[in-house]
Amino acid sequence: MRTFFFWISLLVFFLLSLTFKQPLLEKYDVAVMLFFERIRTGFLNNFFHLVTQMGSIKVLLPVAIVIAVLLAVKKKYHEAFFIMLVFWGARLANSLLKEFFARERPSFHSLVHEGSYSFPSGHTMNSTVLLGFLLYLFIYSLQIGKKYSTSWLLITIALVVLIATSRIYLGVHYLTDVIAGGCAGLLLLFLFIYLYELTARRENSIKKAIGSNE
Image (tube, rainbow, N blue to C red; front, side, top):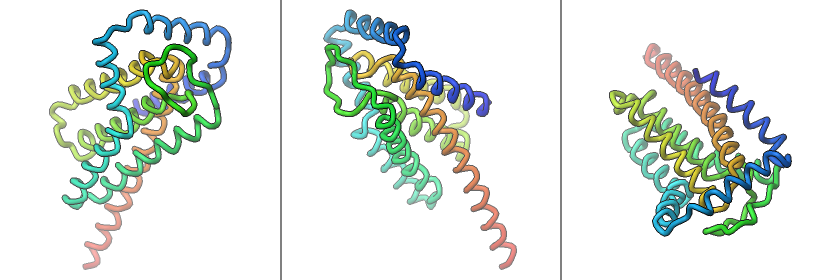
């Protein structure tokens, strides 16, 4: 299943990277932006301002640090290291992709100011990677709260989708930006999971080898 989603994400990201500047896609991007402008209300403005903060460095970094410290205290050094690697790795990858594609931000009535490029969405990509890795780490690796794994999965997906939607609603990203951000985030997430599992197996092998020699 993981392999299937990896290749689908890669295909979608690749296609969007080639076509996001095409007139037909730009037409739909603009139509979606204008739709969200039309439905703006005071309540929704406040709601999506709050939601978008959940995908920002001001929230994700403290979350990553606190969880990494708690894991380190419990001597889960490997997991603590990977949380910080995932956080900063995602941000670096997003910055490089934005500089490479250099897509300008939407020139509409945005409700917040953003200074970097638009494609792919950083909030969407970063939250997909970090929240996805935390879900994998606690539910499927450490098996904490595995009984409610489906509920946690749905909550994580809902949160990422809301963060992605907030970026369009606030007028700082096109629909293609957030779809590409989600796909790039999944690709990076699967890569980090693979690296985590690979290094975890090697770490366990070393521990067993040391234990057998004692």
